[in-house]
Picture (cartoon, rainbow, N blue to C red):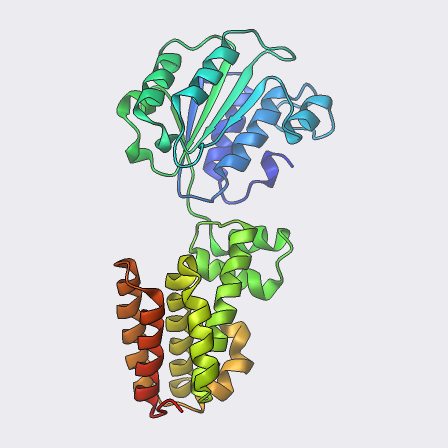
Length: 327
């Protein structure tokens, strides 16, 4: 990969390419923008372009330097990410120690610090000292999704490289590159809303949607034993509970749309053939009340209520709304 593989960030790429073309690199850049829009990818490709002895504004992807960076074993490129929920002073000291020596294989040492809004106060102070008096061979690339969380003393010493939310077209292209089916990529565009999640997160979200769809189908088909068993299983996955209610809301809205305007696009249009028979089993008013109920119960989950009680409440109230008492 190279800088030309980064999609949707024309302004950022123009700024970086201009610096490469004129050999006027700042000592520190701040890549700032929404999460998941390509900041880390751009930083890696920029590091390759800086290090590549073959090309000027792009990485050749075939030289030893490019291959070493791709393999994470270039001695003059250091990629720092949060250790758990923070970037600790020990990590910044590792940077400082590396910068105290000359580069081994090129003119610069490239330091990438991803998630720099997570710097602890001691780490922030240590990094500030490096930014105030950087060695001539240092190139620091600081990445943040929350620029306002950084102190002015840090941001004022970096050249800003702004990143923006991805357009749906760019997002869909990137997701399809990750071998998602076109339908899943389209769905993920809707879910990501301009901020690209990882393929693993997308796959997990689609699995939660499948569980929500199955639960809703069981409830509409008056299968109380299966419903309560599934509800208990879902309640055991606490980290997925809020997302599951999000999907239930969207699925119920799709059932409403199929009742009132069946030709209109759905949130889950790829499930249309599965949702159409479900829509014929329920009327609009109970579905609208179910959406309100799901939104309320989702908030209760955020208040740390027992997920199993919340799901059981949802199931029993849903059956009351659609006129199908359990058993």
